[in-house]
Length: 126
Image 1 (cartoon, rainbow, N blue to C red):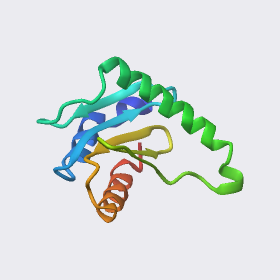
Image 2 (image 1 turned 180 degrees about the horizontal axis):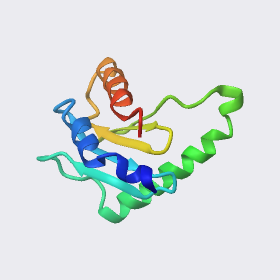
Image 3 (image 1 turned 180 degrees about the vertical axis):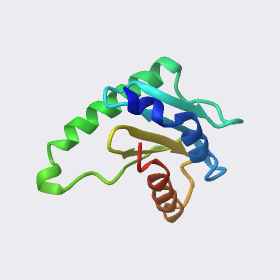
């Protein structure tokens, strides 16, 4: 529990959202799927209700544990990218948490990759 207070999760999600104007949402999720911190970018509207967001985050954590089954044969997951009509969803696994963020879908893929790299650096220790 001491590690949970060690990091300013609010500051981290704010840094993520400030990386690009097309960022929409950022969250840090614990391994059980509980949201440690989450922010919708000012001026953006959520595409899910709060209850749907919480349910989605639980599923993100479940998928992480399911993907670990293939770490030995395929290697660890670097990131997960889901491209939807209304939003691009990204997930990065850190040592102790899951970083979930969304952005506008029309963003070029090279910009998305640069953002992933920057977010990995910001969240490396959490």
